[in-house]
Image 1: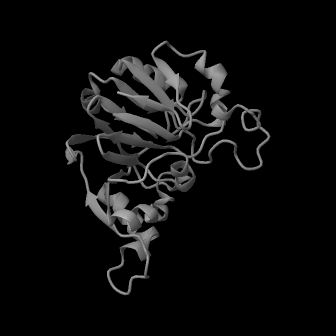
Image 2: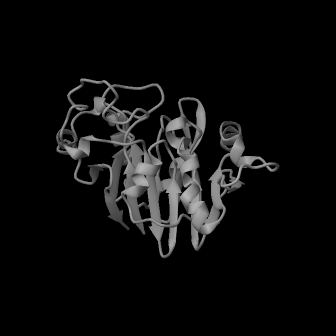
Length: 253
């Protein structure tokens, strides 16, 4: 299984428009972060986790020519605003399967109503197969996907586990019951927004404590803001089994 970090930034990305913060002015490519998203591939399957506003740019930097499914963690714009840019995949392969909580699908129906209308649909508009999901596992090809319940402040959202890989973003609270679903991981991806505490995201200290609790073989930090610091500086401060993810990083399991 191959994982590509399409984007590792927070909701505004890095650099932020008009910002003079030193990290936003950095010339290190690893300090330039598009909105958070990942591509998971195995055999002949390609599964996207979240489809944010930078999706088109992100996919142009890969060799991905087909998508079998899109998993949505939640409905916020930095995770869903690129939905219409799925059209090239639809033109080549037909309707695309999307998996999300019912609440998230209702948000997509409202924001992208022209995609989901059943009458007088505009020619060339994307067609999606919407699959409401709960915390019950489901299958994509030969793989089982296990949703992980997470609280983003008070908003219930999903992380996802596939085999020994788990991807969680925008987490602030994860219950003991859900922690049990994350045992024996080879790779954990978890959000680490900044150094200071935040109302709806793990900061670095909280993310590292959660990694220590789960004890995966490897962990990667994502959903990063400029307030976390320079990539190289932060990377050098992390435990041996923890890395700071960056855009276009690829790992294999």
